[in-house]
Image (cartoon, helix red, strand yellow):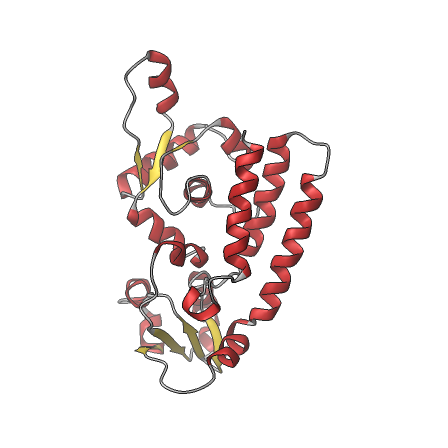
Length: 256
């Protein structure tokens, strides 16, 4: 699993096993195995922290039988706040639920070489915001991240190096822009390679959970680099949307 942070693993597991509906998910031992965490004290502490932050919430307990009560103790769902927090690391998820407002966000920062550590930290912190390099020191994204940027740099040294804008696209070839900034054709190729890996994994004679663990691992790898462009820019048939549908089918088959 490419993800190291326990809280991200938990948030991601809740989304990938519920989908845009943000339905309750039973954080079972199988899900823990797939996302490479265990239900130890650290995990319990992380879940408690996510509950306090309002990023997840417990599902209502079914009190019909004692057995059902025990099973439902691990049922959680992402809140709206949890979903949008996750979108800052995996921007592809945003436009599975939201409609694009048609606005472009442009961020410019010129941080001197003498403050290189600030520049590198800023890039890491904005890594999942769907930003693409437009021109030198200019980054472009369709995601509504201006408030997140303000919260990130407010009252910090970084703030004085940054300019941010919101704009409509007035004139120019949008297809060429998308290819230049996000290299859409290369991303398409990566998804086609993912489909082949999934096919090979499904054909192997292995336990279903082992297969699903590997399939999720491969999927997370591409989700980390997908800028999450809305269908208004890439069309309804964009391969990333197809991949999500295929993943849901695979998940259903291997968990049956």
